[in-house]
Amino acid sequence: MKVPELRLPGWKRPDGLSGWQRIAVVVGLTLLLLATMSVAATARVSASSGRILAGVTVAGVDVGGMTRDQAVAAVKATTEPRLRRSVLVVGGDRRWRVTPARLGHGAAVEQAVDQALTGPELSWYADFWHRLTNEPVTHPVDVALAENNAKVARFVRGLAPKLAVAATDASIKLVDGRVVRQKAKDGRVVDVKASTRRLAKALRGDAGKVKLVIRPVAPKVTADKLGRTIEINLSTNRLTFYDGLKVRKVYPVATGQPSFPTPQGTWEVVNKRMNPTWTNPAPDSWGADMPASIPPGPGNPLGTRAMALNASGILIHGTYASYSVGTYASHGCIRMLLSDVEALYPQVPPGTPVLIHR
Image (cartoon, rainbow, N blue to C red):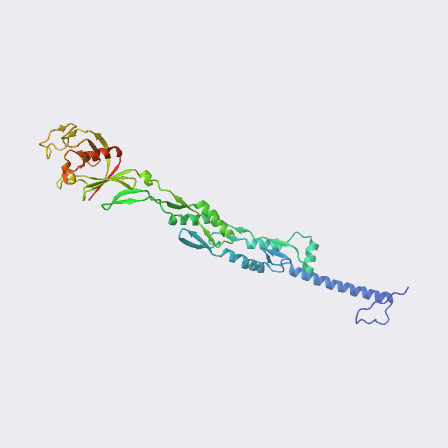
């Protein structure tokens, strides 16, 4: 049988070789070529062993063919802007700007790149083949996001006192000698837990603005719970009776003589007496010419009703000397017409504030 002659391009048959010799030469050359290709393939695979397989992505970034350092840089270029984006925090009429990074958020980029370097679970020959041919694999790797909700909560708690407004109770008070009527007003407080949850969600997402959760705080004392108040103006000798913040009635009164002035300040009614017996409070001074006591009835200095204050010896009471009402005639007490004191008396419970000023 005649063996066909094999020729490589540019090869010339040496003279004097037998057919089997020529076959041996061809086989040798083929083996040499294969060995050369194998060495080249091995070198290529070895060169790519420190790089990520084609087709691998980290957080959506194609990192195929990259070294670890290159991949870390590429992924950080995508993740870091999100961590440093500005988020506007709004609380009432105040504003603060923060970033996720400032409040403890981070991205585990290096750990994700290490997973990418490891690549998918492939057999040794599959790994060799992909590295040799650069055939891409499908292997997405996510970047774990780190959160620090404790730091977010500390930030919100730090804002809470700056935004808190105490509720204002309804009141009638003496302030620097003037009667000030204050309406009830709601206060406000930051709901720290709800605000922390809302801010943490905004930092995780794409929101550029987040409003803190503000809760109203109701006052403890509203106008309908304020109760009754008595104001006595020594300049005008007028008694004003308030129910809540509303003026119910204004009465003329007599107040203390210049030598026995009615004490100014904030007092209260401590006890009440109907048809009281008058007991002489100053038998050794201005009451020296008066009896030790006077029973109820005409001529009783206290009239038919008396309300004692916690200012020593001072009462709001009726008087039979109606001509004195409107003047400075008493020894410090507040005198009223009998009909007026009898109308006022049942409306004034013990504990009612009495504000006396000039």
